[in-house]
Length: 113
Image 1 (cartoon, one colour):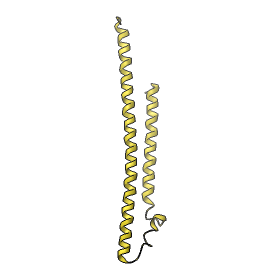
Image 2 (image 1 turned 90 degrees about the horizontal axis):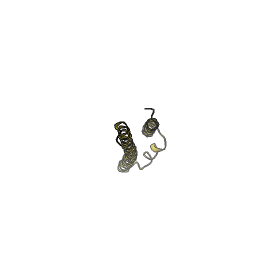
Image 3 (image 1 turned 60 degrees about the vertical axis):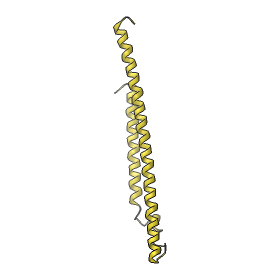
């Protein structure tokens, strides 16, 4: 490569390829972390709900009323409905963000940044 212009072209091309690969890796890692966060949030919500229901059951039994009053909120009295809606809204927002990020990545790959 005696021509400096040709050499500059190949150096620029190699630099662009390396940058592109690293950006794809970072983007993939970010999506992976986002998926992990989503799974952890679901597990924490499930754990929280289970613990609340167990404590309510114990309190009910200690008061001598049995479990009749605490098994129905999950079936739709309205006490537990705001939480699933919030979780679903969060999932919808995360999916929308993923869609935007995918679109940006496709635009970047096609070179129309």
